[in-house]
Length: 404
Image (cartoon, rainbow, N blue to C red; front, side, top):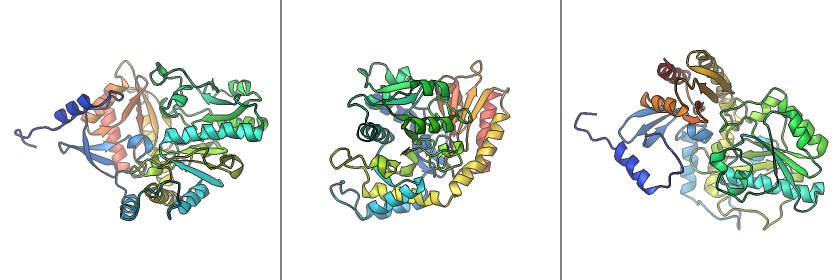
């Protein structure tokens, strides 16, 4: 770029600010292209993407296999609605059910839709199978959760930014501290139909539960005939070094809630997976989505499942995650207060006397690394699973530089 070149970024940012509702506060970067772990802005500057669309881009930008699957389907048919069956549907549902070790899947579009589906299924199961009195079903959730933005979901959020001024709130939810077995035990009643939790809390700062916590959750759910529902929208599909983060806890939930990476960073794809005695409570007309399970989504989602079936991405996440966390832990006491996470997912608490999380992300962006802050001085790092050891080292060096 020469001195006579005119930067496009300021004008693009001003235009976006003028015509969009201010429900986000993005970093001052305007992206135009991406490949693998890298993106390029409108002025030709390259950035290493260490957010990966909140795990929606686990396989990187424009993964060749995923792009080929999308292109092939675009040339055939993209939407039929669920009024008909298309030729991609059965294979996608079968392969995803097998990946999850469950009988059935129910495809939707966004993560929030999948969570809403899990809530509806849990309530219906509670009434039809468990015998909870009509209108009395309760679902236990964890404080500091993040499950989406719908009015029902924010009703059980403990984040004021997500919840304030969006009432009246949907009843039927009980909030307990995350990781507190005694509090969970105390909260269960005969009307409890489900415990809905993230195996690792992403938005809260990549919070990992105490060892043995989810084994205790599983035991309590079994003891009281309650569904255990794992929200794996951010944590699942290879992010933590296993197909599902809950695998680290040695337990199997009754229901998986999936999204983000299931669409390969190309289209929104989500799903709920459970056995027939749970998902089988739904009958025609009781729940659905025009775009849920559409041909394009199934073509891309099916390729995602095939990529995960090899185990390659889970291994990469586990091995490179060890390297990432070793490097990050070396910064504790040198501008970093704490590091948490599993696999290629980390929450890094910056010393608040040094920088806020937002300031840290702005300075990283200036040095060509994209990350996202949350809750004060915490930043989240979640590179695509195609990232290399050298790229991790490059990002680490930029982080160390802004803390020096």
